[in-house]
Amino acid sequence: MVQSIGTKKIKCAVLISGTGSNLKSLIQFSKKKNSPISIELIISDNFKSKGLQLGKIYKISNKVFNFKKKIVAEKKMIYEMKNKKIKLICLAGFMKILSKEFIKNFKGKILNIHPSLLPKYKGLNTHQRAILNKEKYSGCTVHFVNSKLDSGKIILQKKVRISNSDTAKSLAKKILSQEHKLYPKAIRKILNL
Ligand code: GAR
Image 1: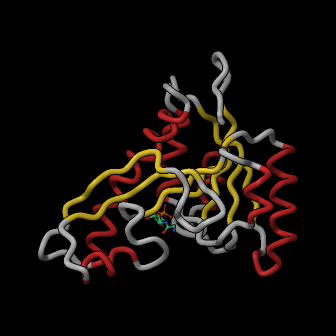
Image 2: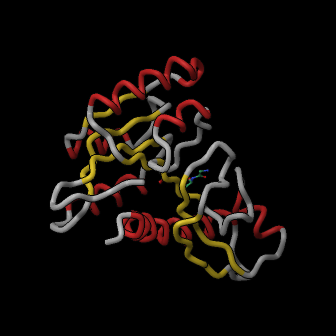
Image 3: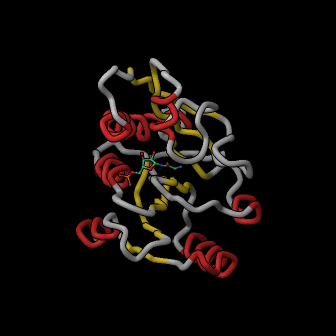
């Protein structure tokens, strides 16, 4: 369980693989006056992640680890997290699967955002699959991470209507803008704020 004590901010790490628009919204959330979190660390598995630039802009330390050597990468990540006293890990477009051992180290402290209404459309290509199945709605989910892919306890979801003209790209865009609002709300929810 993640607990907020007094006025002390919860130290967070954000894990990314790509653009980092969710990272950006979390940074903006952390900068709000009454925000319960501070972002202390950005980690990526990909040197080319655009989101890493945000670390430079906002002066947040960032690290890149090579997940081709996953066990080594995770060991280094655990070291960094403990060193920075990280209490909450937010996966934000992080496209690698964390090992059971890693998850055990941070039980109940890892969150993920997924672009579908889980338990529907776990994994990749969520938007394409939702459209092909003629769903009327899709959306996004923030959930706790457990050892099964996209299967941990759901914290919050937001429904988004799929229109007849939607493509995977247009739907992704609509959902992404909702993700940016949902992640901060979900963090407040788990902290009972
Ligand atoms: C977001 O839509 C996020 O939900 C998704 O990747 C995108 C990252 O965008 N995550 C997953 O699919 C995880 N399985 P961003 O880099 O702009 O935040």
